[in-house]
Amino acid sequence: MPVLLLPERGAYEISGGIRKGSFTWEGLNIEKHLIRRDRGFFLPAYIIKSDKVRKRNSPAIILSGCYGKVHELESNKELVLKKLREGYSVMVIDVTNTGELRTPEDGRTMSYEFAIAKMAIYAGKTLLGYRAEDLIIARNYLKSVIKTGKIELVVSGQVGPCAVHAAFIDGGFSRLYLKDSPGSWENLVNKHFTPDNIGIIVPRVLNYYDIPDMLNMMKNTSIEISE
Image 1 (cartoon, rainbow, N blue to C red):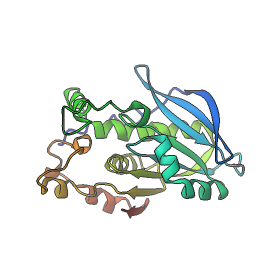
Image 2: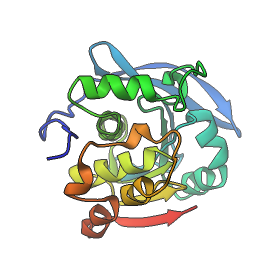
Image 3: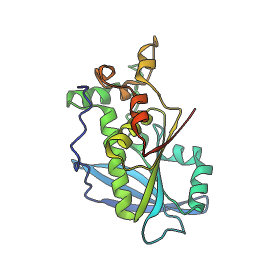
């Protein structure tokens, strides 16, 4: 089997997080949170609570991308404000090696993620697998903060394949939006050069499945793909 090695079901239990203040954006109060992951590692997140949040089963949406929370918030401003008006709460999360957690580029490699992706493989895992875990842990944390019902997931770039795996394995997202995301490993390997894609590599994966195979099997998740 391909070396993805996500933990067994139930291994995504979170042990809480820390609220680290707030700031104002577009006249809205945004809470800053650190979500406890493992081994003293935290995932930075913003949470915006809608004024229309009910006591139970309020909808929510999670956003994530390679350039971090501020970029995702600004680039999805219209969507975020629309969802808040509709009664959604919003979380924006930095998954492993994105945003505040991103490894500084030193110019010595053609992929800024080379070192951290290699370290994940040394541990018998993949960066894609870590990020898929991050998204599920973020979803679980959001449910502990807000009594959410359906949760939608909006991701861009190389976080896309990670989100597909999170939605496929966990089944906890009602809708998946993929923006400018690699749609197929087969397409990548057929190109002569694809920089900065080492973070979505899963060794030997095409012997077993490709990303479209997973999307076609997610019958209970609404999927929207855009460039």
